[in-house]
Image (cartoon, rainbow, N blue to C red; front, side, top):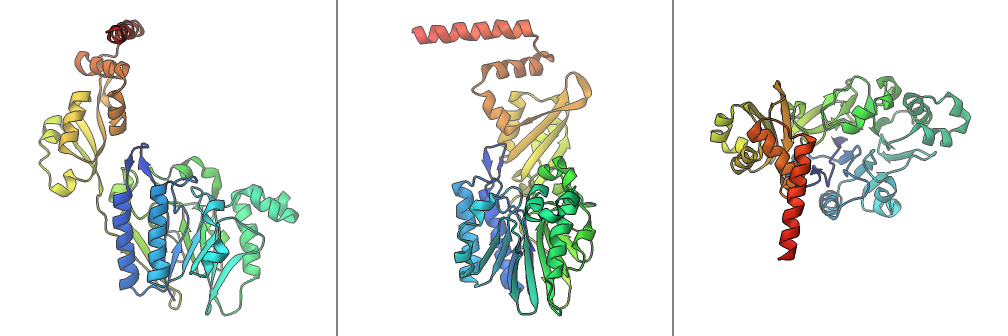
Amino acid sequence: MKLLHTSDWHLGITYSGGISFEEDQRYTLDSLLEIIKNENVEAVLIAGDVFDKSIVSQEALRLYDEYITRICMDLKLPVFLIAGNHDGPERLSGCRRLLEKSGLYICGILEKDPCVINIGDTDIWLLPWISTDKVRSLYPGEAEEIRSMEDAYRTVLDEYRKRFVKGHKNILLAHAFVSGAETCSSDRAAEVGRASMVGSSVFECFDYVALGHIHAPQDITDKISYSGSPMAYSFGKEEKQEKGVVIYDSDTGLKRRIALKQLRKRITLRDSSEVLLKADYPSEIREAYVRLEVTDSFLGLELMAAFRERYPNLLEAAGKNFEKEDSKISMTIDELEKTEDDPMTVFRRFCEDIMAESPDEHLMELFSDAVKEYEKGVSEE
């Protein structure tokens, strides 16, 4: 059986609460559908974090509805989906019994009875995001021994292993932070929650473990893999990652990765302000999601505005910090837009950019008084 493994779609994600990535996600999901068709895939595995937030936006719901429908109804393929830590498990798994009739199998909340679907000689086990408290409540007899997330996973998966059918292949979907996995900046939940790491040994005896949670595509062992997120959500390491999906053949045990098409890449450009303002780069670089690192000047509002004219999808810029010549001070586009309605921030940035020093408290108070006097004068006119 040929399976496509994907995860961490993060539908509805925005940059700093403003810029939408819907167009990019739609483009990438179209690429995913192409792979399904070209590879004659027989089922799709989505290993959690299909949404970016538990309270789902209308934009995210539309994308989810459209592409899951195209897979299940148009291509007539089953989809196996688990809830990740970003998903709202109750909402995600609503009407799941009804949805199974359309080929959509969802496991949002861990239950005592395993969620397992049999297709021929292959059993697909669905293990959503779990917590130690949840596992203790379901397995009170082992509660005292469950002291860590690894204990919790082992308790649950030992129960699954007891139910293996002789001669069947066993595929597991899980959303977990496995020790040894390489993280990147967008793995914010994993970086904060390192106590939730588990060893790869908890997954022993499964023929393939399709993991979600970590955004970098990687193999933990020959049988345990992260598909990675379908597109990059941060600068740095993710810029160099080839995003894609894993194709796993349960008959042969072979797996391979296929790259997903990207509408825009993430790129960091580091040079002098003069070079960066010339923007003498190919259009695919100028129109990418860009972070600029200015090596020779401070980062002021005027310079940021000029950069934005040349790089339409500029997300971040960093310039020299006037306090420390060898350090950087960053500014996002979101911050730039907010300053337009905040005169205090504009004044502070002006002082830093033009006067090369940050205004002290007394100067800020004087400016604040001047703004109030001006606003009072305007209101009296």
